Length: 419
Image (cartoon, rainbow, N blue to C red; front, side):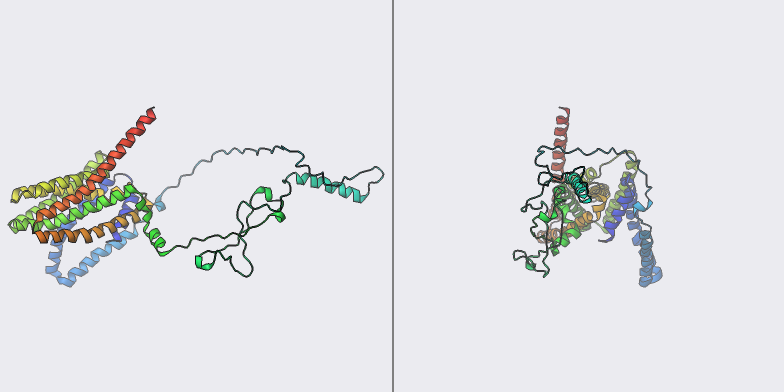
């Protein structure tokens, strides 16, 4: 499940960019319906085919997921490529250089003058004149001769033939020298012989074990405070939801309700949950709902209703409140995979959801036993439910603070833009 859930939600968010609430509501409603029918189906197959036959049938049903995964092609395979129109590019001619010091660039000062007479036009004189003119025209392209102490602006690294390195950078320091010969600038193109080259080490960044783990899990996501707020709130709320509905039958049994009454209460909670998911799917066709606001509303309402739930011990109030909690639960379950998809890009969704699942598992292994110990020590389900309500509030309060800060920031931005 730890591998299937992130992949499934990633595929869903890749394929559906619009009407996510509708399709996810239908998916969640079908899951709830199958969950209600599955025990009856298993009971029937156990009576007809026995234990091994039932396992074989369940394996055959599960094998259909392989063919379902095979048809999940990447979206880019089916995207229609649109040709972009070429834009006209205007080429700007280079700005000619301005000679500020004519004497500095007078290359003919140091050359010997060549006299040309009408009576002495020998082949040697003609060659010297031609060579001088060619040299004069070519030297105008270069700057004056560089000094011997001229250095490159880009470090050049030289490796001796014996392969030994400098004493300051040895192999124990994880420093490696590479043989790079780079030109510093255009001004040194005509005079490579006078450039003083200084050997400099290049440090190669070797990835350690923790760096590899950080890149594999994409731990840079944790630098985003909004993402941290999202995953902590979602993990606490989801943990509180699952734990509450796990402890509810025990709470009802302690209040001396019959098994039939307990079954009716649990069944009503599941029915209202599935009905609310279908209703949200239909409502998503007409109203655009923010998934994070949905999750926030579900966490807040669930905390308030649980505070009322623990005040009653009779059948009818608990039946009604469980039905309300089941309907509120749909807000949390439907919005959960969409909240993260709206914050992180789809390329980073798998590691983002994986970190969330890792955090949720850690909370289940730490906070869950702690709540169970307190319940066993005090013998009161009320204290346990209050702790679950506190988990919901740990999501509601930070998210509310974030919403307020964002609202004030937007108002400040609008006021400054008007000015």
